[in-house]
Length: 438
Ligand code: GCU
Image (tube, rainbow, N blue to C red; front, side):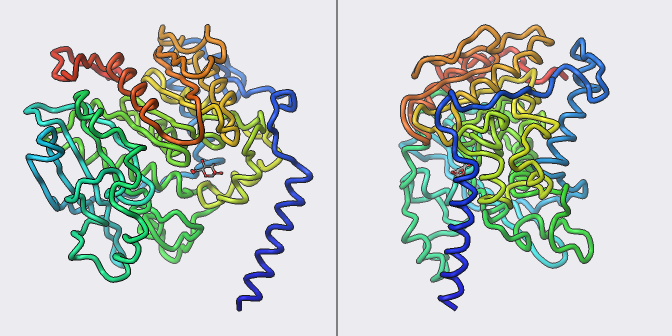
């Protein structure tokens, strides 16, 4: 058995190294091929898009459909309504600065179920607050040392032996550096998080997670145009927002979606699908996220569809080494947020995610913001490190590696303050602020 695994691994690495030799990773700007981006303001049948109405009625739906069919995969229309359980609530948390709430959403079909275990902190205030919402990678208890954070929805005593072993490897508070919880709370925002694996475990297996709950009879995996894991995680974000609309402490009209890396790809796609999200932030999302695929810089479509095929619809593989055939590119994904504010953040040493390609994509998307009379990055050049730009589209290139840091959070809070009218931590603004015109 071991021998077979070894031989398979050997063949796989051989395949990768041959593939890499034929199509080496581009690490220098001078090696970026010439490319032409698909036009944002021209419909598939060549009609020029002149205004917001034509964008919303003609072009936006076309682009959304292409991303759905060809890249992330369509989310099934049939839905499930969850059982909502309040697992824990404390009016005094984080040195009395916050209120903590832990909620479980259980989605069932006749055979199986999934549980989404959500952790919410809000400032200790008696009105609804705007909030940042993002998935975490490995469990709510990693984001802060708070001993009351449940693990997989359970107290430490309730954990099975298996989960305890797992928990020993994933220690409480280990990921604190990626979550500026205190700063977020002090700034007047709530924070909402859950483990993305609750919605769909991040492995190439379509028999589990929400996919399995929504299959048609006898279906065992999504069809070529149907949802991969990124679409499943995006689905989960919308279901959490459904819940937040009923929560008495969160202003669900001011939920700022956040995601890092694969979860940055997810936040962009979730924000495109669900226009109730008010601001969307992509942190180092790279290939399949904010970065332009046609630049082929760093990670390419062929890399991502080989190593992480389950994130996408099967159809996406067709474009491996054939990016020019894609009916879309990632500037169009960012444009799907318009007119809502969107923030793209890169890191200078994250060449795998193509920082410049992320910037150019956000800049290109500005054309659609201009239709709404809003300023994006149209007049901006690729900025120096640590010089953020906060227009209706935000961008920064942080000095450093692929990560989420306190610097990033400071920018996101500033950006949200500016665009949501939050001042000195006071989010109880009288003006009614709509991210999306109703
Ligand atoms: C890999 C993958 C990236 C992804 C990253 C992550 O590096 O190639 O596309 O963004 O993992 O999510 O951590």
